[in-house]
Image (cartoon, rainbow, N blue to C red):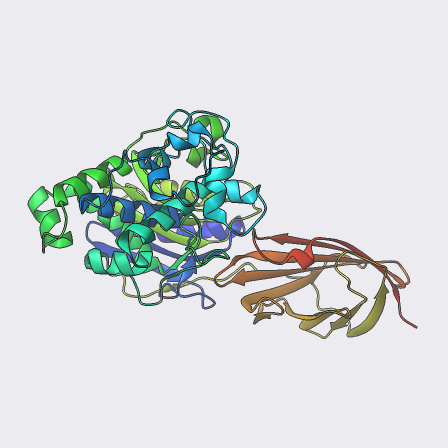
Length: 461
């Protein structure tokens, strides 16, 4: 039971947990981190970005700069055309906060061009705004653009100046689209301490009286603190049912203003791949995690189930400590290979790779993919993880490889930087080692497209 049981279960299920913190009744009682990414390092939070964007919208409303029931088109007349659908024209800011837009998709993922905000006003809707709940990241992206238009500055500068009590770290930043608009739905890179501060904002709105909340968060009366507090309470309540669209058990408990409900009467700031700030007011407990569960079926549920079984509601499960528990990324393991160096000439392929060179030493290896247009050298460890920079993408990565029988080598790279994901290569050798077949898979939404698909080659003379 307790922290050891919580971490043991996650490790046994091979979940790449990057960091965690457990806050209880005013204190951080336990925390852990990987040496590859510290709790104080900015980490991609994915859809926790949406929650920060929603907070910024609520602040602007509390300042009287906009109304939640204003029509979004009134703020983007430059994006509206004569052909803009009437269902888009009727959409309000509140509809967008609730994910009850007239779109059932993320519009910029299905329309060509760099203008992601523009796509929100030109993509063909499929239902009336304010009716059905669909997870639409372009809604949050457009709201981030709204914040910057109305505030007259970038979204993080606005947050830091308007709400200094949440104390966002200096390194927190947004990735932007091709037109320089912050990716308000998925692009926030922030520390675990930033995530905790955001979670505590909601927790305090629920638990503090009006005077205490005002004293902590808005002492200079620059905005209507009562309105803002009510906005936050509403944001973490259940405004929409989500079970019909849930991808996992944990997503089926409802949605507020870009905040998810969860079981045990809690709510959560919830980002893809295991970025969680889960709040349980009745237990006075908050769980913060950073991870990479992408491509791991049920990976998010593993984290929550372990937390519920070993920690939540168990007063004796957490002991206060000033130490940071060291965490380790799952490492592929196998027998050490015999030293090898071989070059394979590749058949024509969509990535224009012409050759693959494999080098294996006792406990390290490398794969060099060469073409007339590019060259990638991928270094990895055997029975250990080797740190590097993923070539061509300038992202920190950590690679390990393992022999899977006499004819197969599997190599996996964890990417932990502004982008978070993994790249996988499986190499199969014919019995005489003269023929090579390669399967490449990337588990990341934006980069590494050169590492998708198959390669075939023959041993160079």
